[in-house]
Image (cartoon, rainbow, N blue to C red; front, side, top):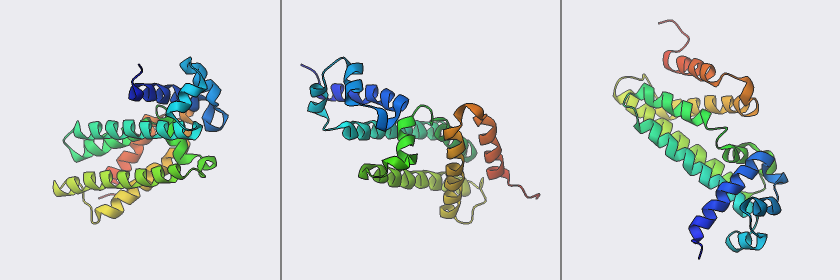
Length: 193
């Protein structure tokens, strides 16, 4: 007998690769079933629809990102290194977690209620992480921050502004150089002191 959670995980991983390659709209249940070498009815036993599978895929990728960010932040002590790790892991995960990012960006998916819920949760979690890094940096007298809430929002806005060029032109941009330039402005500003 097949373990239900193991089967669901197998479907999520396989479907995730197909969604990533063809996009949500062009992916069919037939393709997902074919990739798993089983009938659609077996999949429908565990998932109600293609949308249900896509939601599971997006949530799975969101958890991967959350775990990677947590690990990257905990791996270092200095607030500067925590911020640097956060920014690099977050921005470099675009390719690997394309379904999650498609869900956040693709306006054609707006009619799915779960997408907006995921977007809102993502924004809240990100602000909380950034506030925490900034707060600890200010307490250690590494960051000179008047208001950690506004500073976190400013950093989040900057990162979101960089998402579109990175997301749509992944191959053409040297991500490392761009991220380092942004981090230099963030940490050292542009005004002479």
